[in-house]
Image 1 (tube, rainbow, N blue to C red):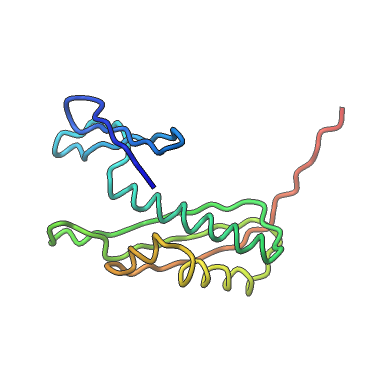
Image 2 (cartoon, rainbow, N blue to C red):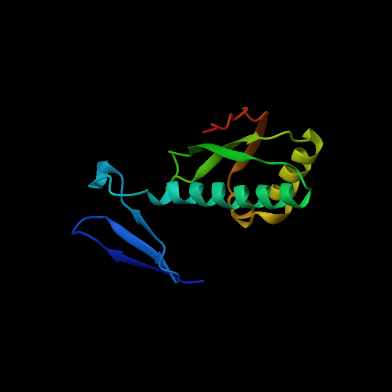
Length: 147
């Protein structure tokens, strides 16, 4: 795995790229001169957690043949501001799942995601408590327009 970063201005704005050419911009917080040109590095850790756990959830639910239509993930995190560096101490991640899903299979998928598969959560849980929750929403009926 290789990531390259280039500085985009004379401040704190960087562009990160992977070997396939995907990019993301990063910037510092405004208090030290950041200009809001990208994600802050600690936000990127949460993006990684959401992406990793989301991919694992979709993968496990698909293998369980659960009819997942959509998934939305919301993450809130607290940092130990009295410490230097101020690392996360509590991370709450909530999954809104859409489809006619079996509760026990969703619970099993969450357990597998956080206990076995998601390497990002495995790293973060060494310094933070990760709490996860979910809600299952039945899919809205979509009426097809007939011409």
